[in-house]
Image (tube, rainbow, N blue to C red; front, side, top):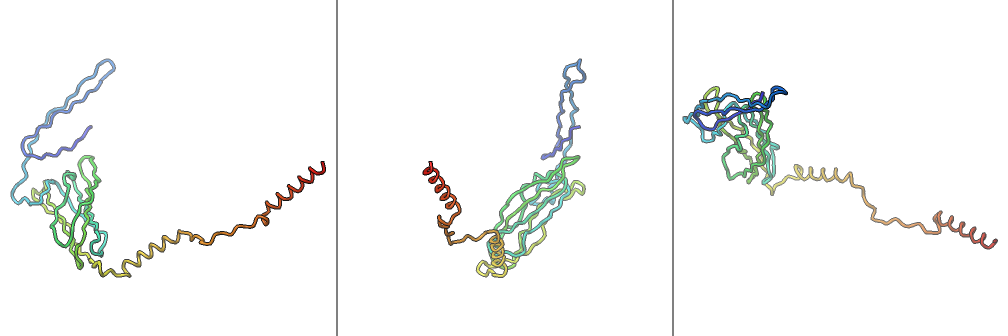
Length: 231
């Protein structure tokens, strides 16, 4: 059985055309063409009343989950915000989330990746990553990301929000040594453990006459000369 998920983008009567497959029922008969029936669907329009400005077109039941990689940064240091949109529906339809711009920070969309299954229904998680760069020191309220969806069960619009996160932004001119520089020194120290020191004093060569090979060569030459004289 072949299953496909179809998502309608316009209201009205929509016709699903027949599927066609070729098969051979026996060795004595040629290929036969099988054809499914045609199906018509009445697609209802979404209500315009109380439709939010940030409506994504997403229909179903969804939720947002958020994680922030730190709670304290130096001014102009990027902060990674990871947001997961999960539920059942056409998750790939959502390409961005909404937020309010501010002079306190700059926001950049980093990447999107999916964990979506297509067994019986389309469901899973779409992961968003945003990079926020704080532009001033002090307590900074990170941007609140949001989008609106439509619930086919309740026939209502729902606006999803990320929670409020407050980050302590340290001025770049007031960087505490014990908070950051000590960590950097520790990392450098750990790296140096694996570096063997090189001796700057060259190894002094052993004189030739003190080497064992020199004595063996001298004895061989002496014996060879004595042999030649004796013959």
